[in-house]
Length: 126
Image 1 (tube, one colour):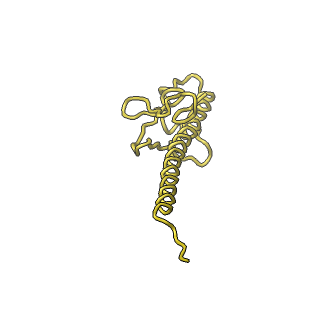
Image 2 (cartoon, helix red, strand yellow):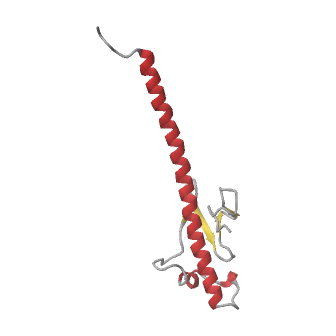
Image 3 (cartoon, helix red, strand yellow):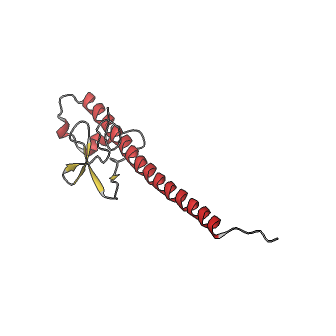
């Protein structure tokens, strides 16, 4: 007696594999988006810590007057430049460090695709 799979059984298995692949793809995209936002948030927190350290050493200076070279000296050890930020769609973002806490700009408007300013994704958080 010859045993084989029917076309219906093969179709169900292939459909299940395809469905699982699609779900894994969506999950990977969500995780990579979160990872990009978390990385930006950690870099912003490092810049914010550098701002606070600079202001502690120079309490009479306005934050708007602080230049990048002055701030770079207060970044964590091993950092030789201000971080570069890339948005969700690959666009280059501008770091506005003349305000406390620092923010990211896309053009002239603030950039925070998470929609919350307290979640530490794309912002300093609270």
